[in-house]
Image 1 (cartoon, rainbow, N blue to C red):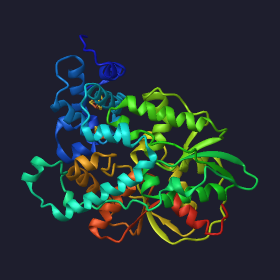
Image 2 (tube, rainbow, N blue to C red):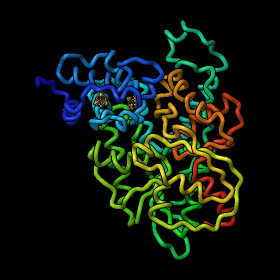
Image 3 (spheres, rainbow, N blue to C red):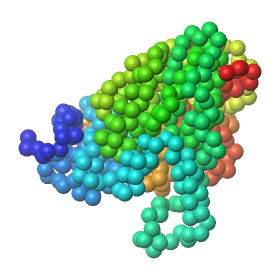
Image 4 (cartoon, protein in one colour):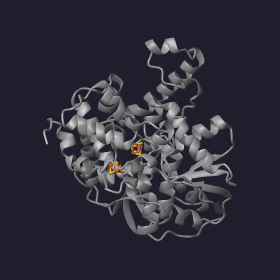
Length: 422
Ligand code: SF4
Ligand code: SF4
């Protein structure tokens, strides 16, 4: 086969050869369900990447747009009878584009400067959401304006998340001790929890310490890098991986836990496999996995009062194979009435920064989730990913449907009551 010098795609060349062009993946793809358009669907993407790899297509702007338009939800990977890693192919094509300078100025600033400086993130996030709200107030919804300003689709109806006054990393010491510790775990907070949901970090620490686990939050941790390497900037992603690996590996830990589905996938699989940056000395667990498989959690719960359904984050379910564990936890909390929704593992349409760039499509994908929740007698949607939580919260506020959104660990912490000493 005559090929180009596309070194990232070359690493996954075998995946191109495995594609039978059968189209099974199309019917799993939430974007194909929305648009019924082959280049926006997995089989089309594989064909485009194959054409580029064989030198039949340039890595042009058209190619970039098609490759950027993917949620990385991994539904296609799950459905493919031939086991084609379409997700890895898409990321490798994005890496080729980044190697050829195709990151925007804003992306370069965020990935290469902002995200590596954890302390700068809270003020910048507060400023960005303030500016977004100002723009909503003063700018008209005008097509002409979009020719001159980088105004995203649907900006008038967006509801920005509230950035916490005091982010999670400022709320806790580096080591949170307990009497007679059974284990010592490193806690990777992640940016979404740090900036928007510090109460989730409080809940994680409460649940761990209640179970006699000492918690270590290494000072200076940086963004796991998921949004960075997902955009194809592997070199910067590797720098983040190496920094976090070095920091956590300084401690003698029994495990590392995180409450973010995307951070978990990144720390556990993408650091060693995709980025080849190395491994943590301690095993990495999602909090659901840790609380059901690694320890036997205390069941001295007090009843709570919730009627819940559960959304499976793509990066937890398909990314890490964790689907039963959150349901086990939910069913163990007295006072939680749990009803599974249809297609609970269908993507919510968030896709990291996908919803910022392709808001109308993201809304279409989310509508399917709402349809599947419609006739359920629930007051709260529970999930295990701050990214999904933000999309659901925004949507519920827009719809004014009165439903709450919670991380699973918040329910556990609430059921443990408020009397624990840290
Ligand atoms: S399901 Fe797999 S083999 Fe079939 S077209 Fe999609 S990627 Fe190719
Ligand atoms: S990862 Fe999701 S959005 Fe992307 S091609 Fe596969 S199914 Fe479609």
